[in-house]
Image (cartoon, rainbow, N blue to C red):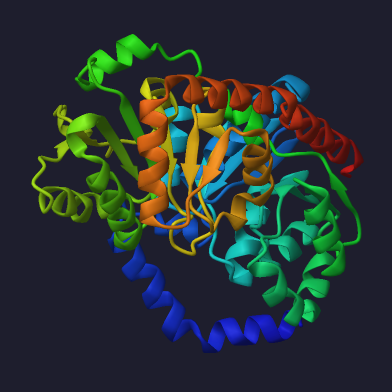
Length: 419
């Protein structure tokens, strides 16, 4: 399987190489292609042991921050190398990760030569990858250089599991180079074992810990900073993905009446800012942009790293990713702020927390624009209902924190096993 994987990578290079390049052109910041090909300017490994923690983009790095913080406390004498795949992830790690790592790099493309070059230079004792980032050549190269390999905060989504089972032979080979899988839930444990994992345990979801970051934000201060009308309630829309979802939410809010509330709308991808602004303006509104220090009743949050604090100003939160069949987006942060959450029905990538939140009364599923409009209208008219949902949200998060410390301790155990 290993040989077949690399033969396919070679023959399909005329397709995936241009695709990677074209995709990078859509980013405001270009990736470091030298690093993506496994060449780094890191100092040689000294007496300190190294832990390499791989994330992908903004969301994964932010989720990893509490683990990195715990890791600093657990392994103070180890060097920490963090890798990201996207330029937006790199920017967030530079701006928000001060003190959490020793070296920040771009993840090498999963070509054997690139991976061997990267591992030869970095020489980690432990490689820990976040959530679902399993690359065959990367894990093979890590084992070639004697590293212990781990999956942390792992998950197998409802959507990907049936597809993965059809290529179980691929995963069986991949898991030969993965020492331990530490998963978010028992469902994830059962699924990864079914795919062939040798050792799997449930340690919980570190995103509950990450969610408490930003809770120190002052609502009054942020309301003034954003120029919000204090006489109106504020809706924060987090992480809508694409035009279809934006229209879904705008249709719902339009039927309620935009004049009744302030809106702060954070699209998941910055490439959608211009398109979202056009949709807002097509409804007779003026779209203000946070990056330009503009203010107005419909503010587009086109900056990195502020959303977790801006949830503090919300009276009601709408989370995207689930109104179209995209798997959902992060509901942890608004729950930690004690905000009632409305979301779509396609939340499979956040299955466990969404089910818990719905059952706890902290969140509500809205399958159609009409349902979303109905819930927005009801909750805006009933402050006591919002207060009850918010209290249930805080209680839910409080009951589920602590996973990041367990992941850091597990990494320390693997570091002790390294040669």
